[in-house]
Image (cartoon, rainbow, N blue to C red):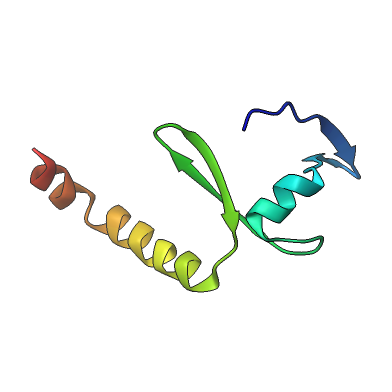
Length: 75
């Protein structure tokens, strides 16, 4: 699916209005939260999953703390 979306001003912020069809595909509705994930292919939007968000926070802490070790493992 390729679709052009328009950025709009929302208070002091900028937002994107998601069409109804996209909301249905994401299985979200007004007031729900979305996760924004950076991938090698671009940005991915998914419904917010608190368990996954917590796991990602832990992973990011470990990656920061063990940066040098992970770098050597990757070599």
